[in-house]
Length: 308
Image (cartoon, rainbow, N blue to C red; front, side, top):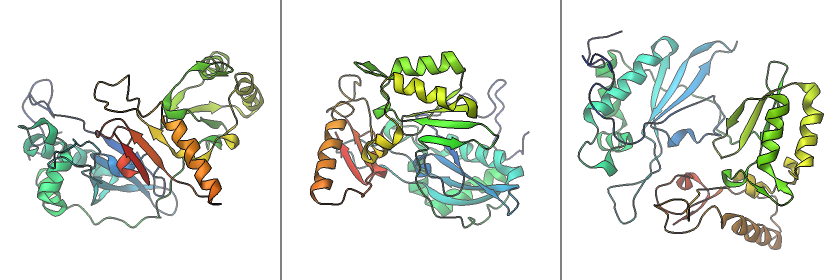
């Protein structure tokens, strides 16, 4: 569908990008009101599902211009949280998404790769002028942002009802590292679960794994596999570890200047000892660590960040 406003190009195979390479990442996150488990404000486009009181889909709140990447000692690069753009009725969401992409395609920085992300275009124009630019492609006004419930964070670890009679289980993975190490055999555990129950897996935004479509009658057998492979129940995982995240860093990433993933567990232990000493063990702190400033573990959205 071509609205004749410049979204669609005359390229025979790629009508949205045309022959133009869209530099750097272009990330789109989708969530529901109240659930910020995916750091929605770190995406180029953030989409929040809006329903009426009966649960019927009405449309989407759309935010634009988030991104974590930056470079040390280069002030023209910076981490940025997305701005609220407005509400879009359900029948228009695809056209608005294409209009946002076209705005970045035609007006984003194409000279300096470090500044090619859409966040810099939104920052330079300001959210009002960027919205006007998107509206010029879209052909309609973007409606005002709809008020929503307050954001909360949930990592969805442990057992949850899926809503269709089945269950899903969040398996905590320290810093995303799937490994067999002595009595702790996470890699073999995951293989055994999939071999026996053939369950689909989803990677969580905090580097853990969600097993879905679990039959309630299989729960006991599922838990036994975890026990047999030395996997702690979620209640025994330190909340600091559950909330934390680190990038691989040294020796696995060519950009890393310092450690992150391998050193993070010792930081968690030291932080726990300090909280215990101060008698504030019930305090939950989001700690994130990266081996360089590119922000792959989203440190700039954490409460306590260590950036290499």
